[in-house]
Amino acid sequence: MNIMPCPYMSFSTFTCTSTNYASHVLLLLSSHRTCKRSFNLLLIALAAPTATLSLPSLQMLWWLVLISVIVALVILLLALYVVCYFAADEDRGEAWSIRVVAVLIISFACYNILLLPLDVGNASEATGLNMLWVWSAVLLTSVLLFTVAAPFAMMYYEAWDPAEDGHGHQVKAALLPAAIVSAIFWIALAGVHFFCSTPITDDLNNATGLHNETENEVLSSALFTSLVGFSSMLGWPFFAVFGGIGLVFLPCAGVQHFLGRPKPVSPIDYEAAHASLHTTSARLMEEGRALDAESAGGLRLSRSTWRKVVRFKREVREVEHEYERLEEAYNQDNGTILHYYAGLLLAFVCTPLSFLWIAHIIVFDLTGLHPFLNRLLVTMDGALPMLGPLTYSVFAFYMLLCTLLGCYKVCCRFTLFPVFYMRVGGTMLNAILFNSTVLLLAAFSVLQLCVNSFRVYTARTVLYSIFVESIQHKAFLRAVFPIGCYSLLVIAFLFTLYQLLHYGKKEDELEEDDDFN
Image (cartoon, rainbow, N blue to C red):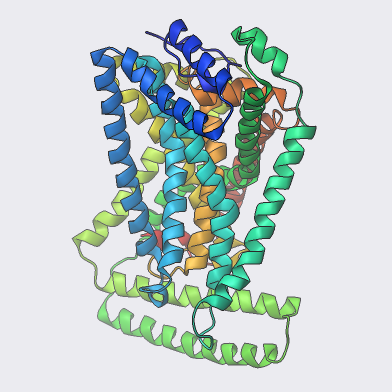
């Protein structure tokens, strides 16, 4: 039985599969007064859908749950692998609590994206799974991760002092920043919710016909909408900048990676290059000693000294990079060659994805001229049930990957975040935490983009009710999505011009695309 979309319906009854069941749940919800009775009603509401579902629906429910658990475990293992793969040797075997936080942040960034196909499948098959509770658990956990866990873990790591025994001083140093970040977030959320919203009680009742809803239920629905919308708004600056850069950089990186592959060198050329690098290393060691002497005794570096330090770090990375490329060129094998051709293949895959995303945002999200990718998703989902979620996952995760690569590009090119440079086997845990937190914040915005961009595909989901319908009652939040889309396209266009103007020029920094390999 299909679920008819009710844009403003209460979240408590969003997953109802029949009129009788909806009435039953509303009766239960309207009668609870104490925490104990609320818990009992929760158990009854959980059991009620199962009792009224047919055998095929029950089988589909357990199949969805099984697939979800397997995918969640796979993502958790992949996140653990990514953290260990990028972690620096200095941090190996240390600060496992920081690693756990980073793994959870990366995992929940992926969960935010992958729950949407589950919501679509649950709505189309009428399995009775209450997706509101699932979304609430995942999104609230995500909010706590970037407002409490991430700042606490970052400051806990930065406060490490080998002269101190135990971890008490680290905990004390981390508590205050985490409390400040969390307080700022919730105060700002309260301001957005109470001062930037229009009354929605009448609209809810008129749209759903549920005139017996209590004010608390309406308030909780509106508060959850504000929480999701505000989190998405916080993620849009990161997503627009890093995602816009990544949309252009990701296709170009594969081509640059292939064209910049090291050519085989003879033993004579190898020795000459090795001697040149040795001379450069000796010069950098002298410059490093001079910078240490210049910055000694000062509590804060001057702007000129800071620029010298940043330039020095870049030159050190460049020498390390040139040394690795020299060794790779001298000891080339078939695996190395295939590695660069794989980068070229990646460029051919990423280029059409970037063009499709940009075209879809223009022709559907901003102008509404054509459904475009919506037809592709609906057709794929109708042809084979798994093709729809797979197609959606490719487009959604591509935007997350663009955000991550864009963040990496910015951290390498500019001096704003030089400490958060990502390098395989050479990334400190604070850099991993920073990049994973950016990824989690951007995941909220990617989720909003996907729900709005694929609204034909997601028309009967919980998040459709939030992002497409309910958020229109938030005077401040409803303008975030179109502004974010325009910003994403403008950043992509400006970075395209930057790439064209700097094509073929020698950079002072590293060629970043090699460090991810």
